[in-house]
Amino acid sequence: MHLVVLPCLVLIFSQRQYLIKKMKAKEIFENQSKGILSQIQVLDIYFLNLLAIVREQELPKENITDIINAPLISGFNKFEILYKQEDFDYLRKNERVKYAGQQILLSTYTAMENYFIGKFREYFHHKLRNNDPSFTERLLKNISPRSLKDIKDNYSEYLNIHLPCFDVDYFTQSKCSFHPKDSWEGILLISNIRNDVAHKGSTEKYKITTLMDCWYPFEFVQNYVQHFEANFDDYFYNGRKTRLIKLYEEKVSNRI
Image (cartoon, rainbow, N blue to C red; front, side):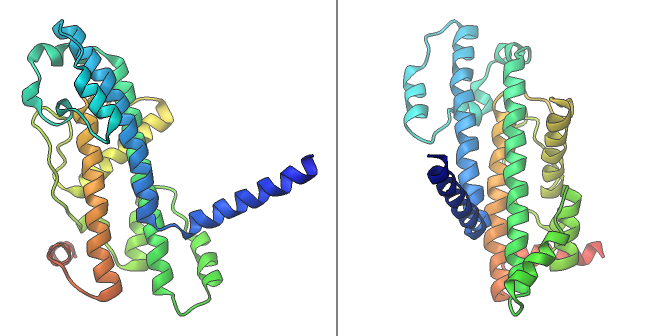
């Protein structure tokens, strides 16, 4: 029996690895984002229960049903005006929200890093498109990044793309902890959170009180990847310069 099943498992695993290699970076990112959104929705339902307890109100069953049946989040994820001061005071003491939120940010950074690595491979293959793909793959094995700094340096050295100079707009709230001065600072912040959570189990560098503190970094990363994909694909493959690419080039020239 093992002689029959084992080769099948090997074949399935090989096919899966082949499909992963063939998947585009954006597609993988979108799949991972769906998983992160599910994490946020689970915490959202828990969060609505907490608010019902602290406010001594009925559980908002319609809101919970909407979250379960569709890829939706409650308004408490987005708008601080819906909170009362006693809500903030109560939630600051709840470590479950903090630790669950940190895991969401860890997953968010992982999805973004995977996108950067996958996108680098796509652009690198395109740049060396006149070479044997197996030769390009051997080169890629020698420049595999181990940190965000490695990713930044690889993009700069091999693709002439300076990641700290590419900016996108983001939205947040005054009582949310996410307030980077630019996109790269936002990416560094999420990276630092990830490093602390991965190596220490928790972080003190970023305060998570409400789901806004998870939602806005996640939304920022989604927005960043969408704009990076659209603008740099057009630039790298077609030589077209969008408004954001022109702003990016201006930042690059001012930086040099």
